[in-house]
Image 1 (spheres, rainbow, N blue to C red):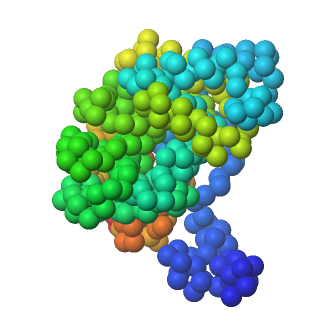
Image 2: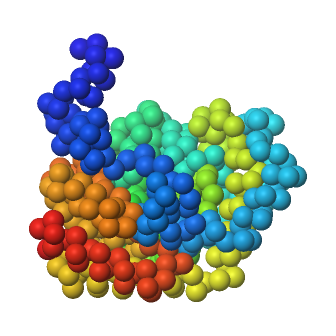
Length: 405
């Protein structure tokens, strides 16, 4: 089939969309008022957003600590733009490295407990650059089947082989490790916090296996840094900082900015710095974003109560949903999934919540496994008790009306 003909078929023929795992094509969903993506926000002030003049409670954001609206973070970005302008107009490799980048890297390395850190322009580029730089033709990446798409794509870009194990299944991980060639370089790669389920990787069980089979361990802690382990992430939460070789994080969540970083041994980071194509051939992180991330880090260190608050809210919401009869899976973080199963039911539930004044996210295949469609709710330290009570009340009304509970 011609490439463009395939695209036209996806939008015009429901059978094509269904064959690709979607319950309906985007145009059909839009016509039915069931299209949950690319919704333009007119205003976004943390816990409240405005869509078409109507205010909704936001429980779909990754702004876990609520720092996008923090005056210190905003002012730091404004001041940096005034001093450095809006762009570096060059890569880190050539003319795009600022003193701000170096300061941020030093601070991040200390914060997560590693020798050195390296800042990229996005979290996605961080994973692409790190994996493709480290993994050679004879090497093997061993990844959890529910790893983030950026880890999957980074593994595909790398020259070595990708082997996957069942989600959080330690026995299956050992099976894969045992089958790897002895002489191969081995890198186990997992999310610290899985972005759809809110589950934690069982790092205390993974670390001994890596030691047993001579594998290195990389943890993508995009949803963990700033949120758990006192803000220092999943690795700190389990006390295995010295046993994990590479820690990855992003700025587009708790750090109220955009960008990403990888942290580890000095020599390893130096290698990635000179071989990561996604960094060398991309413009560097603008000064405003670097300054915002630095300011956010200041707030994290000086206001640890934000981490405590967001986790307390998440636990409150898990209990509230459970009491209503919802299945929230194995979440231990501010990501709390509402398991629906059927794709169309999940989308209709999303729409009903949206109309009732709650903005959340719906996840259908391929973002989640087939038959496991869910509503992804997530919480901020700045949510009020009143807002959370209102959300639970709306979930009760809508869940009954839609036949979910």
